[in-house]
Length: 256
Image (cartoon, rainbow, N blue to C red; front, side):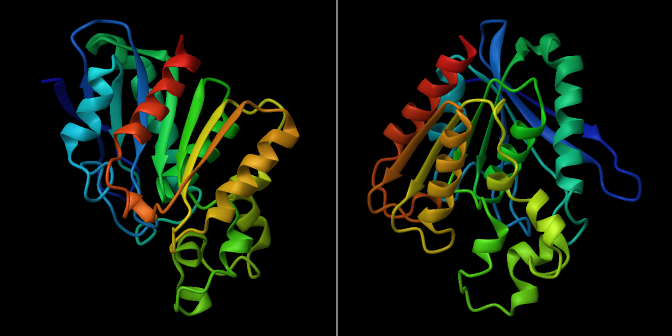
């Protein structure tokens, strides 16, 4: 079993302490994956990699492949709006930069891995930092403007995205642009591994297609995989092991 450390990494003024779980393999100097959970910025837990997939098949699988993994929590949209979540990611990375080596992890070989809303945060953080070796983006919203056209039955000002940025993309275009990875792509972007199910009814496949296209246009290293029949959180995928193995292979390549 991997060793597990639970630690508070930040105490934003006026908010609850923020915690991370750091799992490490036996060998010292393991490259570090920082994981950001999903939940529409409304909910979710660092304890759950993806609903329906247990720790043994997710966190422990990654550690068994030779990585340390820090599962990081961040303030939800009911607590604070964008960009507070990116500030929380930065705080977690600062703590890990200062302390990860004490627990056998090498924070200089860093990969960000997020699912859904967490993938948006991973992409944004990776695009604004220069110490990230790669980003694994699983079915994350990439463009808040086009997400606003995806009718989920919510009033426009009560969608997940609107709650996160404080209103609709049309009402807050500068904020929506800053919160959209597709609009933050640049020539120095880190390598990306993007996977998205073709049957995702919560975040359309076109979101990841657009991000992959923007990254390619900028000259970035990008792997894009459309997973046939996959729904959100990989619902409908009978065996997710190949999806993990493909992402782990990417992380191994960029941290070599």
